[in-house]
Image (cartoon, rainbow, N blue to C red; front, side):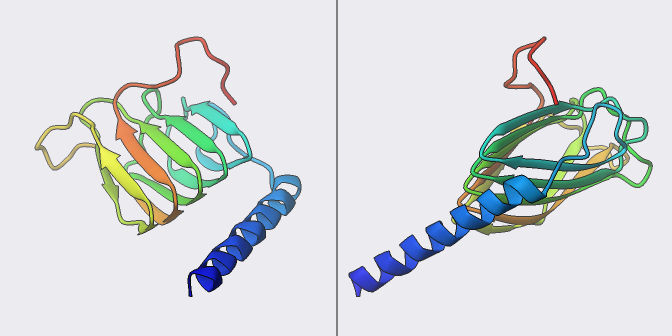
Length: 155
């Protein structure tokens, strides 16, 4: 039984690696500091994006075997809130928001986890970031301080 499970898991990992390798060459990011709705792709690498968009609506984030730092401290949220659809496989996302913003995660977590260490207020009218999507063997952290040093390269 153990051999079967191990072989099945090994086959899945090889399939995921193959899919990620193909996606690396087929998909490209559409995400810059002033992009209002992003398509951020990070496969086998890391991406740092500090948004200055006004307004910022959200968008899609794909991270496979890589990581993303999405810093929204300089962004102006859309009146309806920010909606991020994330697909993360064996990687991680660090979401940086200003103090007072609220982060709500309604994503599917499979051997994954998320933590919200932001400082927010109890007010109902604060900007909110809504996160949906799927996390597989991955992590999401919402924080108020960026792990990337000031002046570091962004994409």
